Image (cartoon, rainbow, N blue to C red):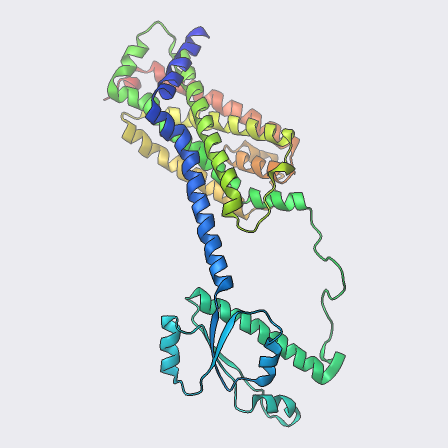
Length: 398
């Protein structure tokens, strides 16, 4: 145990004493995530505000006076220009260049045809031309489409009274949205955080794992360490413990970064982390700790097998991509899996448990299966790593 802690302190001190490595492995992920996500949130929020405050440029032909009166009660920011002399080619150019957001063409005598509808042989059609590749034009089109639909219903109701409608939907003075606010917030976080957390854990271990073993093999310092009067199993376990602690620190930094940037990233959403108590955070921490041990154990085996840092990094990438794919699956899942056998799958069980914790649907049996299986996997990885450390062929390969 003493020798194991000696190796642990040596590895941990190596990271903590190197300011550049400490910054890049622990502090930089959280800072970078906060800056990037906050910047993304500000850009998205700015674009949304720009679209909402934009003065819509609408050209009309034979504008309906009835529809214009109907629009007078709306709060849309619109600049109208009546033009009946534009050709289709001119309209096309103006839409493509952004000089026009929408062109509305009403048929001649539109208002009269609305009044004399009983003698009509066909319905009057309103043509609306817009550019779906431009945000301003697309937003203008959908707003006027909604207004035309509402205007059509108002005219129909005025013509036929209540006979115009077969039934109505949600017209009573009631609040029809029935949901658990805490769970709704949790589901929003559960669709994003599990993927990010798994990526953080993996990237944190990847930033230092290859250098810890493959790097020492490449530099030749592993030979000096192996000939010391320390059991190779103590060396293997000490390295795993040190890598796990640094990886957990890196993941914590990244987690703090995403938590601080969430309000800016999710513009307009009410993010209240106070809904989670000590129990949820303790479970979250223990799950992350167990997952870190599994990831570090896997990366340590790959690092011990590789001859160089570059080779170790390349061999780890497929496992990282696999973890990302598993994380993406959480974005399309509202509920956790009830089949306990699925919680035997490493990383997938972590994602499912994170979803359960964030949505307040914690399955105690699934939690126990996840923790026990993770400890079993870690034990297997440490055993394999120990056997690899015992092999001269593996540890001194060139």
